[in-house]
Length: 195
Image 1 (cartoon, rainbow, N blue to C red):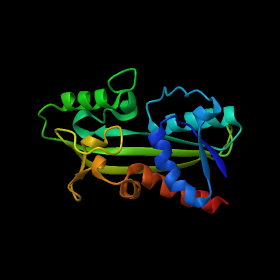
Image 2 (image 1 turned 45 degrees about the horizontal axis):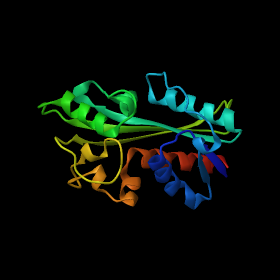
Image 3 (image 1 turned 135 degrees about the horizontal axis):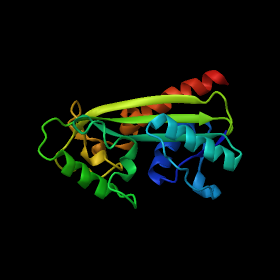
């Protein structure tokens, strides 16, 4: 099955493709089809993911997969949340987002946080029954970056049971544990059940 991914994030495409490829599903980034990014005006992950999936399906004529994910920090009332990619403004910058997060937290000793991933699959733009799957990955925010892999907030996201940041995990382990990996596993179960 050929699916369009409603994202132009190369690292996200690689992560998702690694999980879906064994199923025989080919993931194509919307940018390869000259599809512009959808607006993300909503205040929830699920609404943004659904809007992105419908947009990509409508413009491609293919089934679409969209992920809206972000980091929710308890001491910041859930921020950056749906604004995670643009937390420090435009243009998007992982480095500036991480700097802003550390500045906002300051010396706060309450550093618990979790990543959220909402993945939506639509068969077509007007699919009345999209498949929606969610995953959460709990950890804490480090006072300084650790690790060279991953993207986004991964260098600041600490997993206590492993004594590592998300950026210190290899791709296979991250895919098994992460919010996106959890959501994709649930999505795949539902897609296979629907076949």
